[in-house]
Structure formats: structure tokens, C-alpha cells
Image 1 (cartoon, rainbow, N blue to C red):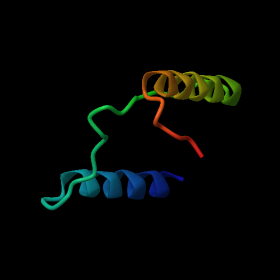
Image 2 (image 1 turned 135 degrees about the vertical axis):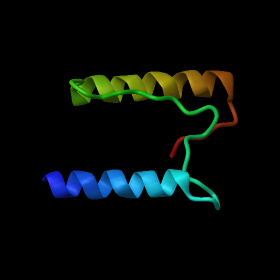
Image 3 (image 1 turned 120 degrees about the vertical axis):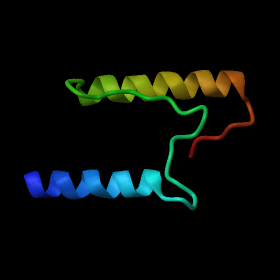
Length: 63
């Protein structure tokens, strides 16, 4: 498991620090740390954010 975590960490570092098209969150991205949060709470959080987005941007469609 430690090897896998290191490989993922190394990959993420390389992806976010490459010179061409580095991987980074969108300017309007929402960061939600789900550590210790149950699946129901995560789904509720996502639903609430989606509802707010639909209210503020009626052209947005979630499929």
C-alpha cells in the first residue's frame, strides 16, 4: 500500500508541475475534504452545490 501511495503522489506531483498544460483545479473549483465524511454526507454536499449552480445558472444541465 505504501508503494501505491508513493506512486500516486509522484504521479500527481509530475502532472501538476509539468511545463506544458499542468494539471490544476479550475478557478471556480470547489474543494471538499471527504476525510472522515460518510457517503451520504458527500452525496448531500454534491447535490446542494448542484442545486445552487442550477439556480444561479439555469442553462447548466447535469446529466
